[in-house]
Image (cartoon, rainbow, N blue to C red; front, side, top):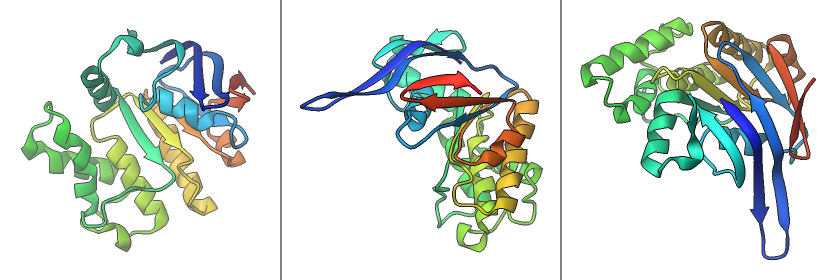
Length: 221
């Protein structure tokens, strides 16, 4: 992922608020990036733009050498589905679905995965994350750490090469927080580009590169 002079401006009736101020950075596969900063610094704005959930105001953002600003909505959806997995502070699991069924959800729009392959694929991902005894459990039957690992498995459903996480350990205790960071570190070692927004200083023990963001600008720590 490559950002060049990316700028995001939010306009109101009376003024303009700069969310990102000419951000340039090249995020590489095989690296675990931590993005840290105070509330309102631009962290969430950056993640939303990187995740194709929000358009940039100006500048260039490329994924797999494709300039996203030139793509139509359908093309953006396909790019997001194929290349990006999301993890959030709130787990957003469907309480009426079992763990493996929650992981299967992103596969439903992926025509490259046959219907008969979905359950087996979901189970394999969950087992790799140490949830072999929780495959058939509903979210309410899981601990907070287990729920977040199910959401991580869901993010991996379509085998994306980019993992974006916005405060993924915000609702977890320290023990489960470390487990999630260890999982994310392992994904980076497997060749994925992992970008995590976090307030926790613990992430510094796991990240390859720590980026600070302040007033819409980023710098390496």
